[in-house]
Amino acid sequence: MAYFKQLEDQLQDLLALCNKEERWLVVVNADPDSLASAMAFKRIIGRRVAEVGIAHINEVKRLDNLAMMHYLRIPAQKMIPTLVAQYDRFAILDSQPHHHPDFEGLKFSVIIDHHPLPEEAYPHAEFVDIRPKYGSNSAMMTEYLYNLKIRPAKLLATALLYGIKTDTQSFERPFIDDDVKAFRYLTKYADMDLIKRITRSEIHPDWLRYFSRAFYNLRRIGPGLFSHIGKVENPDTLVILADFLMRVHGVSWDVVSGIYEDTLVVIFRGDGLRKDMGKMAAKLFNDIGSAGGHKAAARAEIKLEALEDADPESFVLKKLTKGKKIVKRI
Ligand SMILES: [Mn+2]
Image 1 (tube, rainbow, N blue to C red):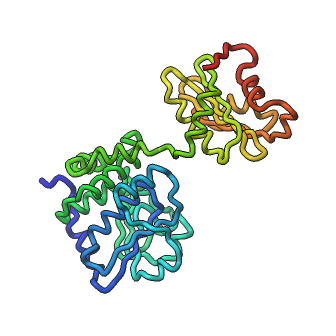
Image 2: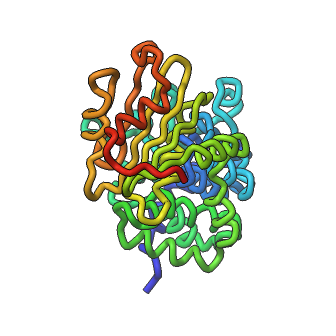
Image 3: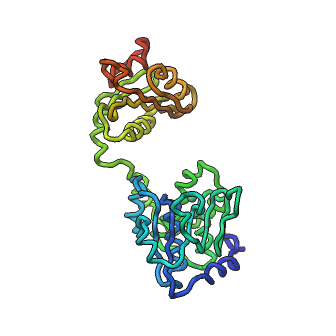
């Protein structure tokens, strides 16, 4: 019995769309799963058509995604009208046309996806394969390759494995046996050192000074940690630091605050077990700004003028401790 399900007839329909005169553009909303799928698709039809390009509608900012494109040599570019004008046919992978306005102007020949189907009209293209049960599009592409007897080369196998890994959050999110099978199959060809290199590429060198400040100002409040960072250029920095501090053993919550433009931004993170961060944020800061969130993650924003002349760091610390718990500077 074959390792994967048999798709030969279906794949003949796909290959029948290809001819040597036409240039194809694969369009994605770039993330590891969609980029890996695009690479696989390029591998499948590459020699049967004039050319295959890969375009992403979004700006790729996540450092692990940038690292993936760099280390796995994925030749993707931002989708712009002058690029689109150079192609004859379009394929959309790991998305459906109604997912984004930028997709909607294109007439797709191929749609391959694993997201839920729209309730209204079934997406239309000459070749459509949508399997909402799959945890990743990369698993579907792995089955295509196997059925076409294409053994994935190292970089392609690594990309697909990474696509499955991120979309299923290392199998912590919903997946099916086919995702596991594809993952297992790909481990034969993928480079795990490259995967490590990509997943560890999380911290931008410019952020190190904020880490330095976070450690310098770190305080322990019972089972929690608090640090005030001062001025930041982007409030996302506070989120990164708050997520990072949750990795400390024995810490059940943390708060990281900073000043972004004219606002004091306070980020809450919790282990989701006991303390409810959303309630905590609302209780502490709703009287003076906007605050809320859910059990494991919350946020408060307070206009600096509302603090009157209070020092923002002391202000947050006082709210967190209410003068009662033991605060230790670390
Ligand atoms: Mn996906």
